[in-house]
Amino acid sequence: MAKVLIGCETSGVVREAFLALGHDAWSCDLLPSDTPTNRHIQGDVLDVMQGDWDLMAVMHPSCTRLCNSGVRWLSKPPTGRSLQDMWSELDTGAALFSAVWNVSHIPCVAVENPVMHKHAKARIQNYQPPAQTVQPWQFATDPDGPDNERKRTCFWLRNLPLLKATGTLDGTSSRDSVHKASPGAERWKLRSKFFPGIAAAMADQWGYHASRLRQVAQIRNRPLNGETQCPPSPLKPLQIGGASVLPLFATCASKGASAIFGLGACTVFQQKS
Image (cartoon, rainbow, N blue to C red; front, side, top):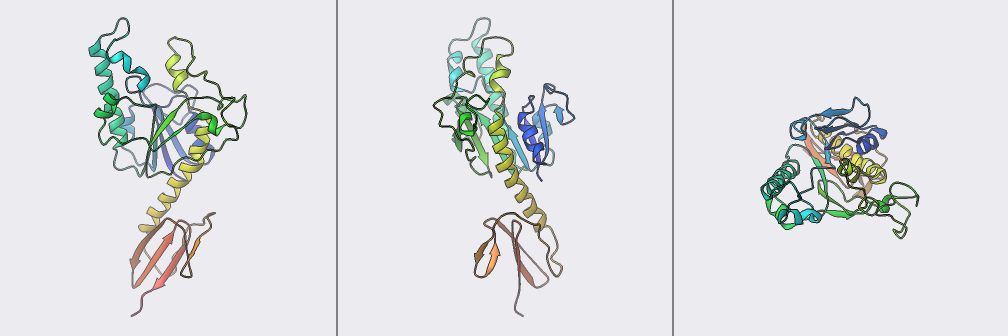
């Protein structure tokens, strides 16, 4: 199983989805968890992400000044705020996004954000377009359930596959209640709370991918002594030249033998003397 950090989350929706599948998952935020748990780290994600993680998913970084819907405040600030405040918050938000997006020691990284405006893009280090855009209703099975909503969500992904939709609905009955949330002190939290259907898909698909990459890394560091043992895998291996090898594989060599390690399959070839 993978060791997973869910950054900028207090609701625990994404964390609990990974935990339900057996992953070593933790959430992190400057604020305390919304519900009692020993799986939440109250602290700065920039510090916590320095640990040993297989996957970091920063699902709710501060996006108020980055998102396209809020660009108007950069020219006409809301009552009681100044233009300097707006641009300063933009710089802070872009710096956070840059830091989590460019972290180098975590193999798999996902960052979620709404559509960004040009000023945000220009401030983000190594900016690139999002890998994909999804809607919550694409992961919904119940028309009256919490996932049957319209809220365009962008994912920036590194070393992770595109998320595959798991829902059965076509979007025609989807709601836009997220955008109609009443003004108030808690509006930002209601709008940033993640959807359980997408969270479950992330845990299933990205958690599995990160776990297999972790196994490859462990195999690469394992000495080749006689018969090499490989972890079991539910994946069906490919038959290539009479060898069973899964699509993702690692290689190593030791003591006169070379090996191809599939993610759960292993074939050892003895070198000719």
